[in-house]
Image 1: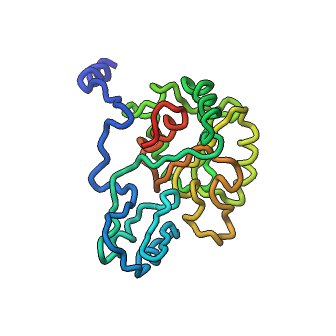
Image 2: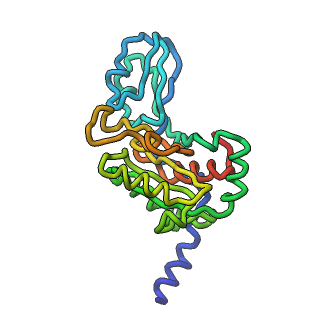
Image 3: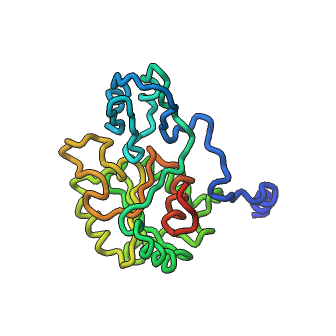
Length: 243
């Protein structure tokens, strides 16, 4: 016990502000146009495994909800018009949070104390591993008045990971119904946010979370960093403005 206390005193405080830590050098974030004239060759569209890129003539757009940040489009673009940034602040609001009045009411009701129920509806567990880090001493989710609960009946926010499989469709719907109002739903990762990761014609999946329940916060990434998750939570609670 004495050794543990000595180690704690030697290490000091490791908890940091949600956006204080720098992303690793090899981290892959948002794919953005780098400027220049597009040859409209379609190489980036063909290279994207999840259909996140659309081209209209010489204009290329990237669906950040569906993008898995693999970087193939950046590698295939011969003119170097796409670049992969380290930006992880990609969460965006949807559903009821798009209304200013409702958003203000949600912030007033849940802004200082939010309880989360995590629900895996078919993920590969990558998002779940990142989600677990929120409770580590570094990110310390509880410092924001936010914590995980075991039952949806005690939850304010339903955090969904994975593309919705047919076998877990009922679990998602029943968990959503068991969560008391006012309730929020957060789709975590490209699978839950878009439903495209394993193909649109896959017999085993139903699509993204918003194909079955209304989603209020989308957090893109494959998987999203813990900081990206914190950004989405604080954005939903109205504690920060969208980047």
